[in-house]
Length: 229
Image 1 (tube, one colour):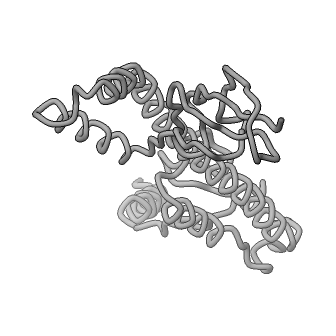
Image 2 (tube, helix red, strand yellow):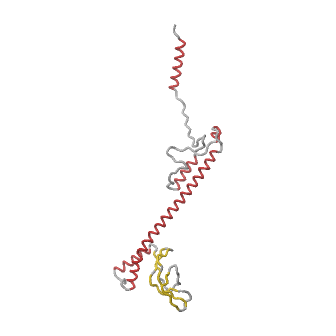
Image 3 (spheres, one colour):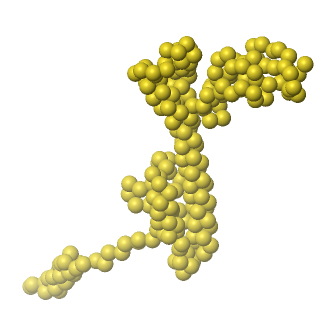
């Protein structure tokens, strides 16, 4: 006797399995920027969090743009937080913490950039000073030749003038004035002799010119000083 009951149950079970196999289950994706369970900010794959060890941004605009992108995704809706059992204020606390970290990172980057620019300027200045110091003996020879009348005219006189003018563009200033008050910061007194009608120590003669670049004295001028009698 055929068992119709078993066949019906078997067909019903097969149809049910086929319907489950062919049916489309709904796919739910959680795109929230903050994990509702841990309260930690989520980041795209390959990205860096605010606490990462990546290098500083190339510019203030890039750093601020990255910060704004991070901070915009931190707030958690109150209903989501309550539904997941997370305190409603956890999103705001995370945002405040990330913002403070970002401000500290931005301040460190600005200080780093200023320090690099300052070091670069100092390095350039020291390089110029090194070149000027190396040319001071050449300038002494030019002065000696001029005092002996060897550079009154001719091509060498023109070359000497061009050299001195070129060095002036780099801030080189000659110290060779007479009749001025003696200044130990720019003058080196080799001889002192009594002077007439003077009240303070005065430079009466320059034996060797001094030079300075900006506020830095490269070499003090060797002078004869007239002192009050």
